[in-house]
Image (cartoon, rainbow, N blue to C red):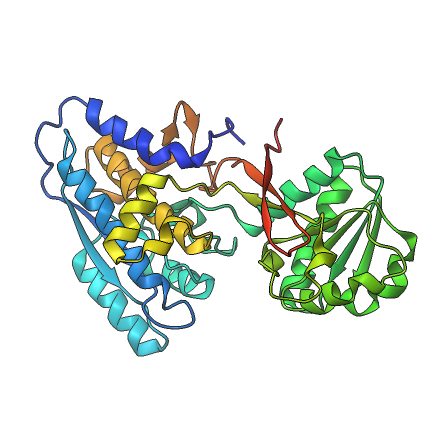
Length: 368
């Protein structure tokens, strides 16, 4: 790992500052920077498409008005839900000849696209699976599941916990999360770790470990509703990304009081929130805690990062733009690892109230 990166929420402003002070670019470069943006206009995440589009358009407008303007041409494509839709979208994108693309936010679509498209810089604004073809060409502005799990394990170890239990569900998400946590605990010297199927939690939690991590998704509701009947209340309960939600509508919400969760820092500036809400005529986005707002901001940042890399590369060539992305920095800190992963993001610690809602109570940097 290279140098610890600074908090990502300052990235857009820092990049705009680069444009304002850059010399030698008094006029827009020709040809324009060409960005393919793969949006979700269909499928289960269809609601994300309009927000992605609005965020990208805000960035394009800002770049056009900058003191050192960059002309950006965008091709929005939805890969669809069938083979024919996928191929038609990829063919249109190929004819557009993008210099780089913004990846789909669905892992399955992203994996297929990256495998199909070949070497082309791709920026991910969502937490995609870590197994992809051409990994050296994928740059992530979001932390991966493994990064978040490792950070949680480090936090628990830092609290001086002597024992832990991982309550997991018997599905792909639960097993994968359990294995990653168990490995992370072992590497950090925490040897007293129980692996507890969620269906057996009443029996196996009698040992009352210092930390209980709920590594489940929808199965969390059953566990949490019955948690008051456990032999002993967990000394400290932790939730993971798959079950961190607002449970205030459930009658057992008070069972969550004091539970903790660790999430990557996704602060969104108020100014961007306001502009996004105005562009979409949705005032509620100014205060919404929905992750889609952070996704929109990362989409904005991705376009800004693309323009910065284009200016530094002084070329439309994929190889030079990839090299520029690898060298991208924010306030003197490397933005990506050599493999294109976000270079050690900071995290926020969230705490649940007796009402079943959560709020930030502190920040956490795994490297400090």
